[in-house]
Length: 411
Image (tube, rainbow, N blue to C red):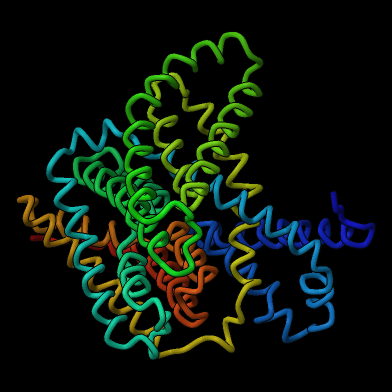
């Protein structure tokens, strides 16, 4: 078994230390400016990456992140685990009872808020693949991906914004949360399927077996799997050390589910997300246990992932104003109007529909994770990926003030 040598171990430890320190510094700055921590963590990666540190101190940046291939492979392993764990805690936030309580209205809004961006994004990407930077050899799949990428909603970010605005427990707030949860589940199912259809998809079982197993896995985990978790958790809480037993077993089943979906040709993150939904919906997983998982992952693994984004591309050299402008404009307008028209279709009053439109326009970590997977799979170019990151940042920053403004409208 090949292992890291002395210098490679030192290099890996320096990489992790630099990423965590810079992520914490910039996350605290973002917090002071009343912005999500993810904004600061992405900016920390841009500072550490080829964009800034690589321009100012190229030798040092090359030593830190480019001089040892084996330590970079080990770091990539940390990043892959970070993505899986991020989707796991995103799944924990999905409360199925809230989705059921909002019923058909949430479903109408969620579907409308996805359909319009997907159609518009597909048409734009398919008509102008070279300009936008989608893979011309995988044109249909790449164009569908782009539509989906601008149609996703950041559940964690919108939940935090609603809490800050004291809207979380209101009827409008619950409707937004329920719709965002549905968007998350539908979005990751669709993305996993289109990734398996792409030429770069890793599935070896064939398209239809993969789709069938994906749907079966989702259905089983949210029914039988959830029931088994409900029966097992009381025993775990009673017989094992708390919270150690719960934490280790939760992460173990997360990795098992992730490995299964990776095996069938769907990305590992999907398995982590679905098991998170099944576990998070259990009445025996306490809020304190959820908080421990969130703190552990959000403050250690999440920063590693978000900083790694800035290490992968040069945000100055690969920045394209035209591509970014199209992505931001099409992404914001289609998502807003899709959610707004869905709300009106559900007979929601106009002012509340505007709030719902702005709320579901919020992007964040999920959008960026999806974009990074597509970049690594060869579906999109660096410039398109950068545009998606900027869309996520702009929408995360603007959604709160826009929802607050809509709440004060006299309609």
